Amino acid sequence: MADTRGIERDESHKTNIVTKIQKHIDTVNVILILANGTVPRLNVSTSYVLSTLSVIFPKTLATNIGFVFTNVPNVLAWNFVPTTIPEVLRDAPRFPFDNPIALQRKFISINNDPKMKKDKKQLRKTVEESEQKALGVLVDLFDLLDGLEPQPTNEIVYLYNLSQTIESLITNTLAQVDQAAAKKVEIDALIAELKVNSDVSPSTLFLLWLNLIPVGNRV
Image (cartoon, rainbow, N blue to C red; front, side, top):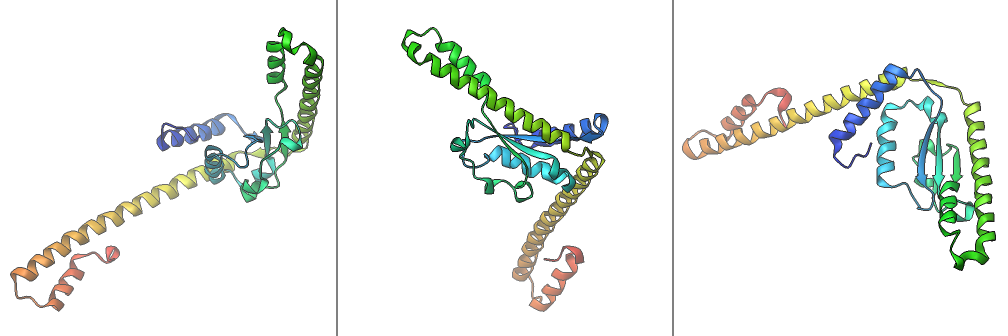
């Protein structure tokens, strides 16, 4: 979702997701949304994806959705404002997480630097603490999974098909409105020409205008 190549790609991705669910997935245990916990709000892409998926996800699935906020070693580093989350998901569980593998790689990269020798002990302790915190978050996450009731996916497929039908109806209606507007412009031009080249009264022209435009397209 939120494909930089355009809306058409997003529609293709959405269709593929629903197709895979329909063919291979009977129930959903949990949906985890990854977000950067150091920024104040969800970025445009994540907000768009949530809005798009909320159309095809039933309300019963809201209790099976959680957030994992990355780059958050502790609460003091958590800059995210919860009110920027869509209202239906504001009670969803949140897990602050700081990737210990990234810290470990950084520590290894400076391990042989003589300038860092005096700080090595403290840095190693920081990495170990990060690993323990990450393990605790994973335990909490699996505890959540263990207590969730799997949700059937048949309603996802139903809502997707319903949304596609609604979108198709809206597109067709807008096309008809555009056609009616174009026809009105054409008729107005003809009436204006008649006014110039004939002695027909304005009331007669108005009746002619009404009769030329179908009832359902009069604007």
